[in-house]
Length: 168
Ligand code: GNR
Ligand code: NI
Image (tube, rainbow, N blue to C red; front, top):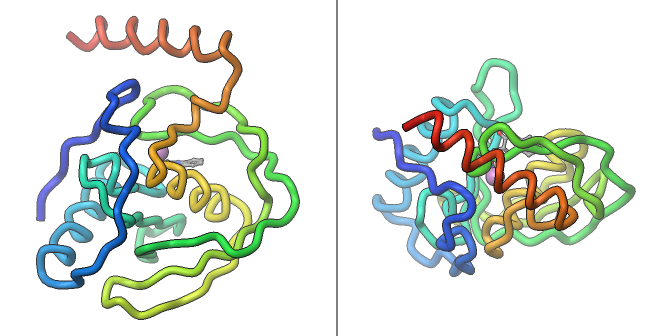
């Protein structure tokens, strides 16, 4: 297994539209295992393939305390959305920035394929429900900060630049 390199906002590769997965062979299995290792090491509760510069419709999530409930979503679609989410979100590709995004549903139902290509459906609220919406956006080339006001985006850009200088 390996820890993969994460793309950071405003890298334009984060705006790539992911393509459907058609091959469930060993290469995909290795990618999923490497993404899981990368997510747990970060640590994060979700990771989209887009963030590791692989533009396939695949994301993983694990909101369990013990990091032992890995969920794999391939070619996912949200089929039902309900209510309004009140939670703040963050992103491994935008480190240190947390905010609420308008328009997130409180609960979603998602239909997807598992790592072996078997279809499943899952209804989730709370952090997992929000994470699913956040990861689906990554697959569409959207980063959550792009939903914030222009003023907030300008502040974020400044803060990221400052943090970048500090880490050099
Ligand atoms: O680790 C993560 N935490 C999180 C918190 C609230 C809403 C969404 C997320 S996803 C994020 C990891 C990430 O960047 N996934 O794309
Ligand atoms: Ni993210």
